[in-house]
Length: 265
Image (cartoon, rainbow, N blue to C red; front, top):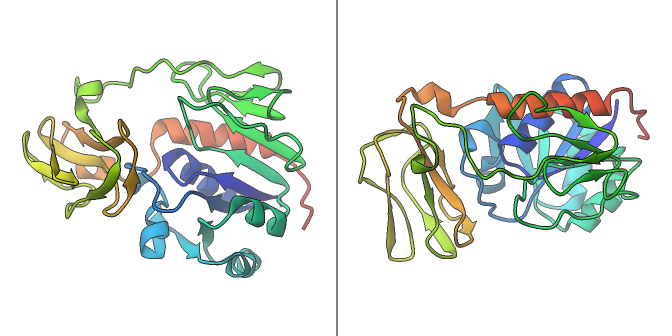
C-alpha cells in the first residue's frame, strides 16, 4: 500500500488520513506549528499541541523530529503528525503520494507536480495537469469529492452551509493576529454573549447559543480574520465530533484517486 504525505491537520486533512489508513495505506500529516484549526473534534490537530489525538477511535501521535517520524511510520501503531521542516520530511519519507489538504481559500496554490509520483490538490487553486497531477472537488454540490483529471476545481463561493438556520452568523473571526487563549472545550454549551476565548485583551463572545462545534486550541497562533469559534445552535454535542459529511466525501475522492498506487517503500 502507498505511503501518503498529507499537508494540513484540519478536519479535511484528518478525514483523508483516517480513510487512507482504514484502507490499508500509510498516512502522515504535516502542518505548521500551533496551527489554527477550530473543528478539533473532527481532526487530529490536538496531537500537535498535546502529543496525541484521537478521531473515531484511531490514534495520532506527534513526531517531534524527522528521525522520530521515520520510526513511527515504520511502526505503524498510530498516524504520525509532525510540524518540522516540510522539505526535510518529504526528503526523509519519499512518499508515493503527496496530498495538499490545507484548504487555503485565499492563497495561491503551490506547484506540487514532481514532488512525489502522484500529487493531489484539494479545492480551489489546484489544476489537474498543471500544478498537481489530480485535483479533488471540495465545493458543496453534486460534484463534491469528484476526482478531476484535467482542469480546475471550482472557485471558493464564500458561503457556508446553514446549521439550524444559521450560516455566517455562527462563526467568530479573530479581530487581530495573536495567540488565542481559552479554557473551554469542544462540545461545551455556551449562551449568546458568553466569553469563549481571548486574543490579547480582546474577548471573543459566542454569537448565539449552542454547542462549540469549533474552537481553536488554547495557545494557537491565529491570523487576523481567521475563523476561531463556531457555535452549532442545534445543541447536540455529538455533532462536534467525528468526520463530517463534506470531509468524508472529499476523503472518499482522495482514496479513489490513490487507488492502486504502488508502494515504493
